[in-house]
Image 1 (cartoon, rainbow, N blue to C red):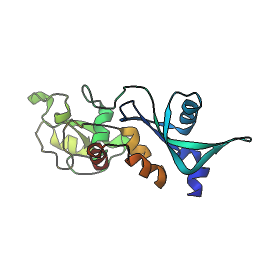
Image 2 (cartoon, rainbow, N blue to C red):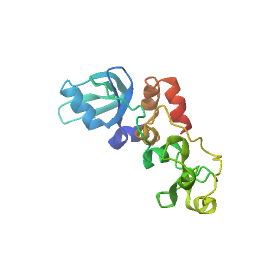
Image 3 (tube, rainbow, N blue to C red):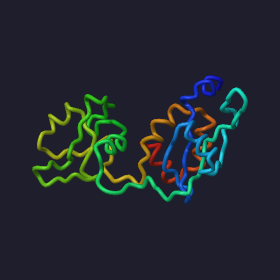
Image 4 (spheres, one colour):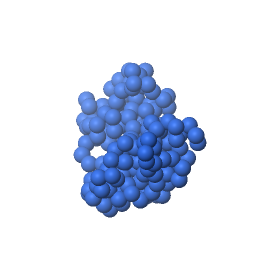
Length: 185
């Protein structure tokens, strides 16, 4: 636990909109600034971590609410990065976890056969499978090509580096149906 507190780069704050829905994660500096300026309501503080200056010590906010109606609900067509996150950077056909230079997007139903750029027709694919597949229709085995209800890529990355206390606090603010979807990502 000492390391987390000393290493301020692992301190983040979950931001909720005015409907108490999560829509962003910000670094601790921005959270402290918003709190100091009165632009947010702090809902939870870290039970141990504090931010110190030579003359003052602040409790560290881990969940704040702002008066915004922003949402991270999925709207519009998918982007390449949204597909990567939805599929957890895993090839839909062989299951291999991919690095940036190995990853491609594949149309389950090829464009030449009428396949569109849509959530239900795009999957993450390795170069090897993509070249073997060519113009065929393969059924994805390792991912389900569907439009997610919620996509929170920053959460997926950051949840792996935050400490236990922060993670446990955040889980209370993420609706169960969204939490299930994010855990499976």
